[in-house]
Image (cartoon, rainbow, N blue to C red; front, side, top):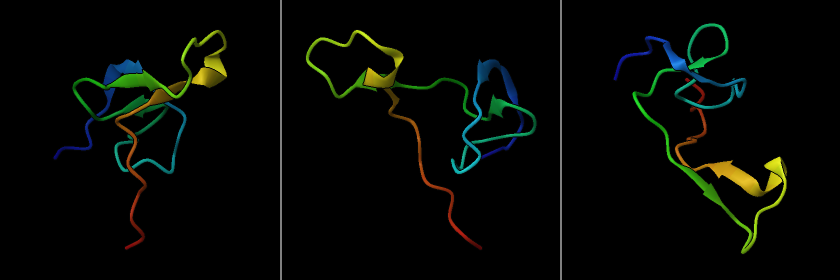
Length: 56
């Protein structure tokens, strides 16, 4: 998988394996979900594409 930035997907989570240069994600698309039955705040929404970056 390439680490090329997708400038259509902004992300500031540097701990994600898909984080790219600047504040961008390297995925072509991401999956968004929620852990709430009736989300009403940004904190209720999750990036389901997140994967913890492995330490090398």
